[in-house]
Amino acid sequence: MKKPFYVFLRIVICTCIIIGGILYIFGFYPIVSVDGTLISQRAWQRTLNAEKQVVNVHAHATHIPLIDFVSPKNARLLDTIRQTTLTFLIDSVIIQNQGSVVVPDLDQLSLQRVNDKLRKTPITESTAATVYGLDLATLKQTVLVPQARQEILSETLALEQKDFSGWLLNARAHTRVKFFFVSFQWDQDGVK
Image (cartoon, rainbow, N blue to C red; front, side, top):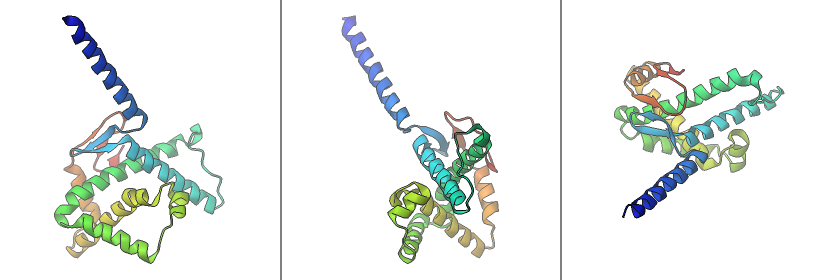
């Protein structure tokens, strides 16, 4: 009687280990919770890679040697980029969640602004891949729409005689941020 139970238990445990391994390998696990909204390792890695790509495109354009982010001599720069990109992702969630209180249709307006800008100054798939290392749809979702949200919120606050930086510091102070599997801390100034 006990034998079928143990066989079933082994199958469940093995299945969980396999699924967990797959989630880990592909980065589909959360590294940050921002008031319950999860940011995955995959999203952070994608943003981190895009930022490293932009840094090297800028270096190439200014005839500076490309930066080897694996080299120990660039560890401090890489750590700064890691903190900056994670702060960007956390701020994006904060702006999306709390900014919609200030601008109720913030998401729709942001998407509309991005689409309008892309119609006026189109970005090709090739450009997105070269500069950011992303396809155009991912660039839009990861970079352009969050930037548009920030611009719209900043403009709306300015019309109300309020400062975006002060609003963001206050919003950060009232946001619960929890880290998983990464050794960072959070305060009003961002990721440390």
